[in-house]
Structure formats: structure tokens, C-alpha cells
Length: 128
Image (cartoon, rainbow, N blue to C red; front, top):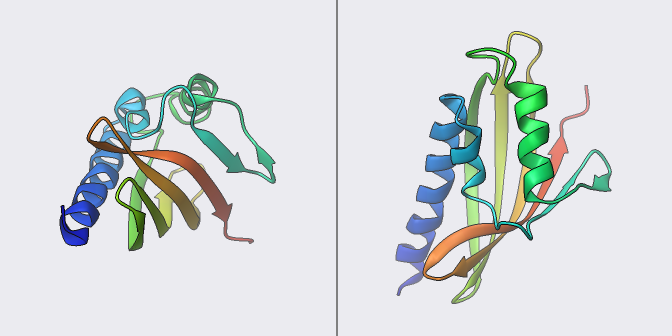
């Protein structure tokens, strides 16, 4: 497939994840990540696996309907590294009643069984 087709497929994964988050569907959001072997880096350390990350999102963002806020990814840049690997860098903004968050995501995308997923996710919050 062409790079354009692959990049569009990756953008679709990110759009589906964003839509799932904004509906409070954390399982749908996590469907975009490698399960169980995704690597998450945030808060200055390597976080736990897929299930622990899902548990964290539910605990910290799922208290009541709408408490997850409104998530938006923007300025998405994708570089194809191989037919089954890509680097994605994007800005993100999460608007919530308890406080907004913004920053940059760096993601290693891998194509497994014909589907793009996030194998490595690094989040860098904007300093306040």
C-alpha cells in the first residue's frame, strides 16, 4: 500500500480513539493500543501495561458521565519507518471541568494483523 493510504489508516485509528474517549468509552479508546504489550511513558517513568493503563483512565477520568472531558489531537505528523512501522507526533488538548491538560504525544505505530496500533506511547505534558 502507498504511504498515503497507510497514513490515512493511522489517522483513522487516532480519530476513532478520540471519538471513543469523548463518549467516555475507555475500552474503545484503549483498542488503539497494543494489548497487552503496549509501553506507556509519562510522568517521567515507564508506566504499567495495557490493563493497568485502562484501570488508571477509568479511575482518574471516569468518575461520572462527562468527567473524561473533551480530547482533541491536532497537528498530527506521521513518518513511515517501514511497511509495518510509523512514528506519529501530535499535540493533544484535554478540556475538563477539573482542569485542562495539553502537551505532545510521540507514538510508535505498528501494523499487526493488518491493523495499525500504538506499540509505544510517550506523553509530555505542557509545563504550567
